Image (cartoon, rainbow, N blue to C red; front, side, top):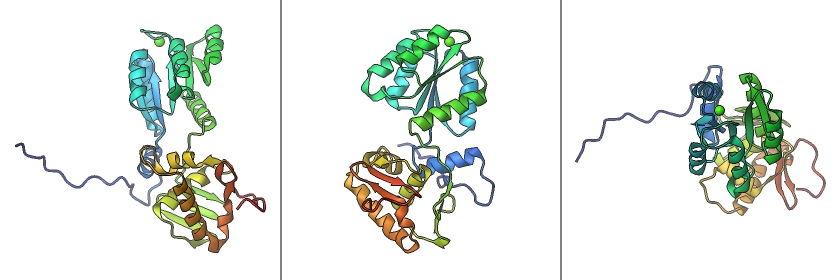
Length: 271
Ligand code: CA
C-alpha cells in the first residue's frame, strides 16, 4: 500500500475581491462559475512558432486552447472534446486543411463547428474554395493577432457562443458574479444558484431567444441530465423573486420556442 501524498485544501477557484479584474482572473472566475463554459479553441497549424504564438495569445485572453500539428491530431482532439472554434491552417503535413474542413462539415457533430482558415497570402482560389466548403471566415498570413482575435470573437458571437461579463446591467437589474449579488431596482434580491446562473446567462444575451435545451446547455452545463421542463420551474422561481421589483417582466416567454431577456415591453399574451 502506498502512502498518499500530504495535501492541503484545494485552492479556491474564487478570486480575491477588491482588485481590478484582469482578463485571466475574469476567465478563471467565469470558468469556475460555468464549469467548462470557458471558450475553447483548437489551433491546427504545423509550424510550431506560429501555432505557439497564436495559442499563447488566446490563452492570455482567457481561452482554453488545444494545439494540433496535423489533421490526424486535430481529429483525435476533437473527438475527445469539442472546441467552440477551430483555427485551421491550409497546408498541413498529412492532409490539407480543405480535406479536414470537408470532413468536419460531413459529420453530424461537427457540421456547425465554427472554422476560421489561415491561408498564405495571395491564395485567393484557396480562400474561395474554403468558403465554399463551409469555412466561417479566413485570414491571410501574416496576420495580426488583434485582427485574428476580433474575427474569432465575431465568429463566436455569430455562432451564439457566449462572451460573458462578470457584471451585467440592464432594465433596472444588475447581476454581479464576483459578489454573487443581484440588485433589482436598487434592492438586493436573493436567488438560488440555478436562478442566478439562468439570469446571468439571459442578461448576457439580451433579446436573444433560447430554447430550453440551449438554456440547459448554457446555464446548467453539458454534463448534467435534466428534463427540459425543469427549465420552466426555474424560470417561474426566478420571476417570483423578481416580481416585487417589477423586473420579472424582462424574463419573457416566446411561445413555442423558449425564453429571452428583453427590456422591451412584452406583448400582452407573452407572459
Ligand atoms: Ca502549414
